[in-house]
Length: 292
Ligand code: UTP
Image (cartoon, rainbow, N blue to C red; front, side):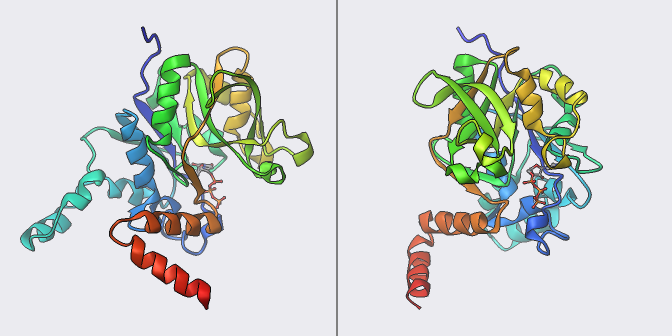
């Protein structure tokens, strides 16, 4: 029988400055930039809902209130659409059950670890998920569902990982893999944030999805600054290894790093090409452009 507490809460840290996308992100949150016609945050929330998450916790900052508006009812818009007989189903994913969206504020972007710690009172004493919306994970089932399935087997803490060329590891959190449990599930014996290439314990990087036990909040409480002068989530997780089970799930699907410009363009092309309503047209456009 499953002994593990269910994962019902997810934290979405969205308080970062998005400097790599300036000037686009001067007045618009990075998380609202659309891939085709859905903002990044919508993909992440849909992925969480598919995994059974009921409570959505946004860690927001200055200039990020439009993210919360996105999940609110837009009365004027809906009334006008209804009057004109337009299809309203396109708005369905933006409807939240009243009370299910909670926001907390990170006043200063001191790092991902600090952003997560800002949600400690809402997370309480339950295991919880974390989704970084600028990492777009496309798979069936989605990445968080794959992680929740793994959590139901092994419990404890999990991160999703993928392999990158060794020379790229120093931009990411990297795991030291231990024993293999299955093709997609590995024990984690160590974690390091942005290691120099020569010191990286593997080429498996953490890819923006986590399931963590609430003790991480207490670890973060006393945590100093790490790589890049930021309070790093990876450092807090590393300190929990040995005290609690820690595993990595290799995501079966595609990941697009939409925090980078090329990753964003790649995601836009990939998803547009897959769409039934436009894939063929976009392919013809891409072929024409490549032939120029
Ligand atoms: P990133 O470093 O990728 O995002 O953080 P950023 O800071 O917004 O973007 P750049 O690097 O300046 O272009 C990963 C995630 O963690 C959140 C970000 O919003 C993003 O979802 N984050 C980061 C916070 O919420 N607070 C922080 O202090 C740092």
